[in-house]
Length: 374
Picture (tube, rainbow, N blue to C red):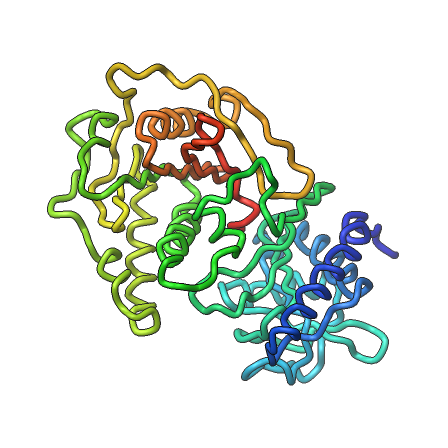
C-alpha cells in the first residue's frame, strides 16, 4: 500500500537544489576542494519525504531522531558500511534510529542503481553536504557543513508540517545586520573579531538545549549601570566573576576547543534556573537567577519590532506580551533601559528570541532566530 507523498517535499526540493548548486559554484570559483556532490531535486524530495514520515513513527515508544547526509561512501571519512544497504523507507529509518540518534552521527544516503539507499553511517562529511535532520515529529531541518570546525552547521530551511521556512541568506533592508545576526547568518568571516558572536551563538544553542526555557543578558564590562535594572540581592551572585569562558577567548581556538565547549555547556545549563543569567562582554559570569525590574525613571516598554530571518517574513511592531510571556517582557524592558545590552530568551516550546536596541528604529528589536539554531 503506497503512502501519501509529503507535499512540502516536492514544493521545496527545486529551491534547495538551486541553493546548493549556487553555493557549490561559488565555492569552486574560490578554489574550494573536496566538496560534497550536488543533490538533484528528485533525491532531495525523496530524502525529505522518507524522513518526514519516519519522524511521525515511534520505535518502542521512542521518537525518531536521525540525521541523513547525501553522499557516497567514498566521500565520507572512516564510514561504517552496512553489508546490506537499507532501503530509504520510513520503516527502515525508524528501526535504525536508536543506533544513530547521538549528535554528530549521520546516516549516509546514496544511489543504488535506480533507487536511493542508506549505506551506513559517518561522523565526518564534506563541505556543502546536504544534511536533513529530524529534530522532532514533523519537524525537519535542512543544513550543511560550513567548513569551519568552530561553527554550527548552516541551516538552510526548516519544514514543520505544511510550513516551509527558507532561511534568508542576507538580512532584509528593514532588518539591521547586527554582529550576532551576522554570525548566525554566516555573514562574518571566521576572524578573531567575530569570535565573540560565535561564542554567543554557541551559548544560545546550549541554553536552548535543556528545554526548560531561560533568559540570558549580556552587559558591558567595566560598568555597574546594568545593576539599576536588577532586583537586589541577586539570588546567585558570583564573586569573583567566573572567567573560564572569558579566558578561552584569548587562547588559540584549536587547543582550547574542548575547554571552551565545557565552559559553554556549564554556563548554558545555569539558564535553566528561574531568573536571568548575567554575562559581561568579556563573557565573565556575574550571576544567575537575577530578577529584572524597570530602571528608575524609565517608562514601561510598550512596543518592539519583531523580525524573523526567513524568506517572506514581514517585520511587525507589537507589544512584548504578544511574542511571549514574562521572560520576553522582562528581556525587552531590560534592553530598552540598558541599550548597550543584549538579551536572549529561550522558550520551553523551542522558540528563541534575541533582543537588541535598534538606534535606527529607536526601539527594541526582537529577532526570532530559532530557525537558525535547530
